[in-house]
Length: 401
Ligand SMILES: *Cc1c(COP(=O)(O)O)cnc(C)c1O
Image (cartoon, rainbow, N blue to C red):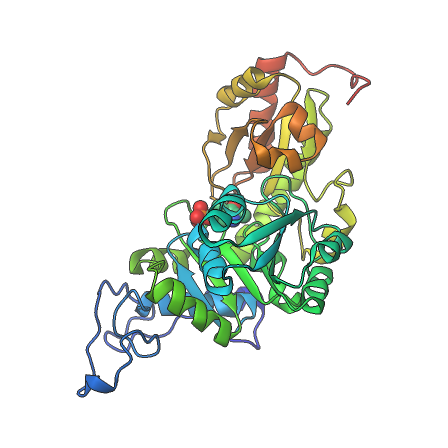
C-alpha cells in the first residue's frame, strides 16, 4: 500500500477478500485460539508470529495493525485495549529502574499520572516535565540516564504544538528514543515517524475510530521495537485489543481522512466565532493567529489545525457549568474525536494545571471536540447558550482580555 496516497491506504490497507467465504471484507473472527501445527513442540508459546492465542495477536487485530502501520508509514503496529494501554506499553517496555524520561509538561491526564506518580513510586523511573514546544528546553533536560523523550502534540487540552523534527534530533543526540502521542493530529495531519520519531502512539478511541463506540490504542514504529512492545505489554501483560473493537475501529478508520478534513474545517469556523465574541474569555486553537505556535502548526500540520479547541466564557466555574447546561445540540461528555460535538468543563485545580497557560488557570477551560455537524448549527447553539448565560452580545469588547 505504500505507493498510494493516504485516503487510498485508509480504504484498502489491511482489507482483502476473505478466502473462506469470498466476502470482500475481512470478517469478525471471534475466536480465542487458532489451530496448532501438527508438531506444536516447535512452537514458541509466547510467540507472536504464528496465530496461536488472541492475547498474542488475532486475525482482526492483525488486519487493523496493517491499516494503522500503512496510515502512519511505520513497519509495524501493535493495537491495544485502550490508548492508555498503548502509553503504558511503551513506558513499561522501554524503561527500567534508574531510567529518566523527558516529557511534555502538558499531556493527557493518565500520561502525567503514569510518569510523575506510578512509575517513580513503583519502579524508580523519573521524569522531567518540560515545555517541549521549546527544543532548547528539551536539550537542557536531557541526562545521561534519559532513555525516552515523550511528546504530545497537539497537547490535550491546551493544544500546545511541538516541533517533532527538532525534538527528534535532540532526543537522538542524547541517545534517547522519541515517542509521540499523536491522538489529536492523527496520521492525516501529521506522521511523526516521517519527522524522525521512533514510535507514535494513538488513542484509537478518538478520531481513528471516530464513532464513539469502541476503545483502543496503538503503538506504531520499526518492527523490532514494536515486536518487543507486543511481547512485553501484549503477550505478558495482556494489553491486547479485542477482536470486536479491532473490527469496529478498522471500519471507522476507512473514513478518517475525510472526517479529519471536516473536523478541521468545523473547528476553524467555531474557533473564529468564539474568538470574535466578547463574552468569551479566550480561545486556544492552533488555527488562530493568536495561538502561541500558530506558525509552527501551519508549517507542520498538513491540511488543517485539528478538531480540538479550548476556551472559557467570562465567568466563574458555576457560569461555565450553566453555559454547558444551556447547550442543546452539543453534548457534555468526556472523550473526543467522535462524530458528535462534545464539550467538557475542566476546573483549575490539581498539579497538572500549574503547567497550563495563565488564562486556563484563571478561567478554567471548556474542552471542545468539534464534530461532523454543520458548523453553522454549532455556532448557533454556542450563540444561544452564550446569550442565555451571559446576556446578549455586547457591542464592543471590554478592555481587559
Ligand atoms: C484519550 C487520550 C488518551 C487515552 O486514550 P484512552 O483510549 O482513553 O485510553 C491518550 N492520549 C490522548 C492525547 C488522549 O486524548
